[in-house]
Amino acid sequence: MIIEISVGTIALAFVALVIFLIISLQRLRKVLKKTQRVLSEAQNVLHSLSEPSVEMIHNTNKLIVDVKKKSEGLDILFRPLYALKKGSESYPSGKYADIAGFVLEGIQLFNKIKNEMK
Image (tube, rainbow, N blue to C red; front, side, top):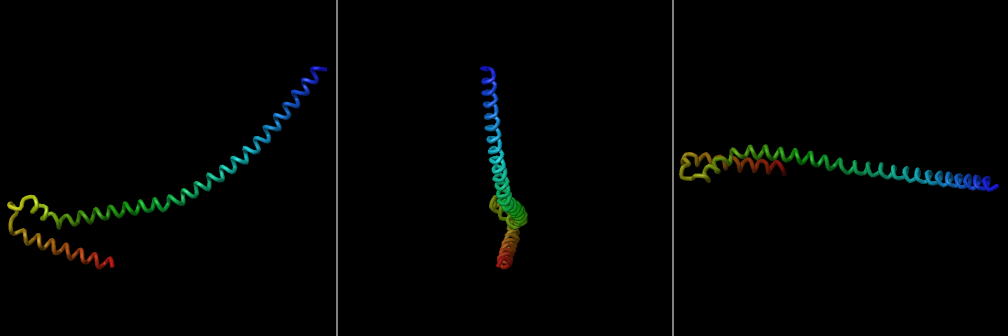
């Protein structure tokens, strides 16, 4: 008689444990589905936020390359001035006209660019 009661108690405990595990697993599945939905939405939001940032970085890189090219182009205009600054005594006097011409061309180029931007 004691053995039957013990086996019955063990069986009831096992059934209660199985029911508890089933309920826990169902709740866990719901939580995982909700978590998956939230993570998917967060990924979509991050992707939509990152696209303009990536585009802005590409545009900034293009702008930097363009400014470098234009700066290198303007170095021709300022090279005689750099030479004049380094050693004005050794600089030939015939080059002053060239420097003035470069400065005037630079001013004309600046005005042309300024008018095109308007």
